[in-house]
Image 1 (tube, rainbow, N blue to C red):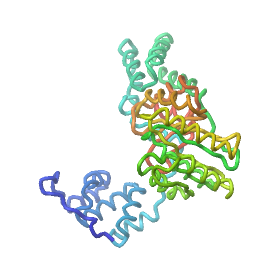
Image 2: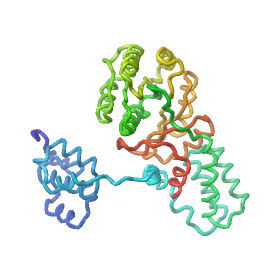
Image 3: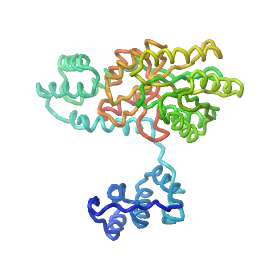
Image 4: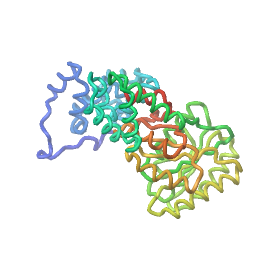
Length: 388
């Protein structure tokens, strides 16, 4: 099973020799994170490294990574006690606030929000820094300037009062963009639009997983037949989410794939149909007409459909996503936004600019790489997590 698993680096490529004795000592001292960092690129070099790395993963609670490694190499090649411990472990159930807090960690860390509001004195320097932070947060330059001026005029006595005021204003702005994900018909057809790389495929997989866990019968239809390997990737996500799948080879007419998928869904009594679409912005006109064509096909099966058209936006590009949103909205009636990759950016405030500019409800946010890291947008918890 592990034939070819181990590999040797050339001597000149080794960053430094690692002693098994030293690694075992670090394990005994409980320095599991350090061990995983030391071995994450080198655990394939020999069986001892593999066993130590696996043990450190289990002890540090990296359950998903440890399970993938177990599947890859087989339990007969790993320490039995660590395997037993892994099989007994259940991932800690995070609250929605904890998930948001984890997802927005980079926003708080890069901008120094955790420490900025702990200062005791307010003055011109404080207001200048506040304006700079709000701009970096990507809420929009005009909004950043106006909020800073509002704070000045309030004559607050402490930075803590400023923080609470800003939290209130953020919640006020975002409350107008809160929207509930609708699934009222059977089957409910949901179209996903957005450029390539925005996170459509993973979002569809995560939502399918959420719905199948609720007991719904879900069908995923792969209509992005232009991008190489798109169908294969989505099929893999469908398998992980325990959802059914309809796709075809690259280059097939997307409309034909959708028709086949909808026929299956309506005949076989599915609850939800999640449809991926192409996102090649370099062929804008063709892309937009293709999406309009898919909407018309849905209406042949359900004249009121699709029930949702969700625009997937990448949070790491901040306000540039607003241009994308306007483009897609010009072709189809976008009913909601999914903001992805919030865990990988300091631009968590982009959601404020998107909300103010587009007035489109934010339905979900993506806050990590795990299949469970897609959550309904909750204004209160989101804003609190940004500042805590």
